Image 1 (tube, rainbow, N blue to C red):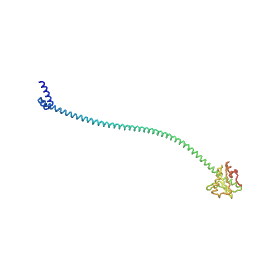
Image 2: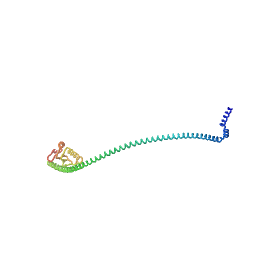
Image 3: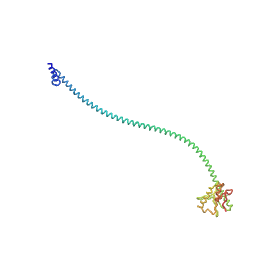
Image 4: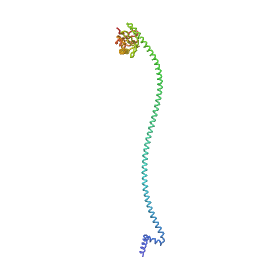
Length: 280
């Protein structure tokens, strides 16, 4: 009988577990119907909560995935920003270094320019001192030149007077000597376009062509010969078949005397003939 009881219990428990209506019936008998209903509601609520919890977990997973994606995108963007910032910062640093180098070069250039200006100012000051000294020297030279000009003016006047005097003396002495030789020729200064002579005179078939000087050398003889050629070309009517070339000098240099002898040119001074006249 104990075995049948055991089997009965098993069947009872199985019915309670498998047959809901039986379970409620038994519970009703036992006064547990309302409790079982509530327990079933709680179980359903737990199932619903578990489902919602599962959904929430899925949403959390999705949110985590979305957050991870967004975080990764944000991290990538931040990395790009950091890289761009680093590049810009490096470029800015390089630009600042270049600006500092340019500034240093400019500062060095300014210092060099300032030094050059200072050197130039010193040079200008030295030049001004030199110019002031030169001005004093020039003023002294100008005063000396002025004195020399006055002396030269006196010398020129003396030479001019001496030249006039020697020309007059030459015309007088040469005319006197010609008269002694039997030729009465009046001598004067000849001044025409292209030719000037200190001594000129003509009579019949003879003319006298001459120059005079205080100190006479060979150049005066060459000048006289050149003037004779000019007369032949421009004024042949002034010449005669017999032409006497004469040089009157207070001092006849030896070179002139030798050339005059070869050229048959009369050279004389107030006291005597240096080279005799080429007369027949």
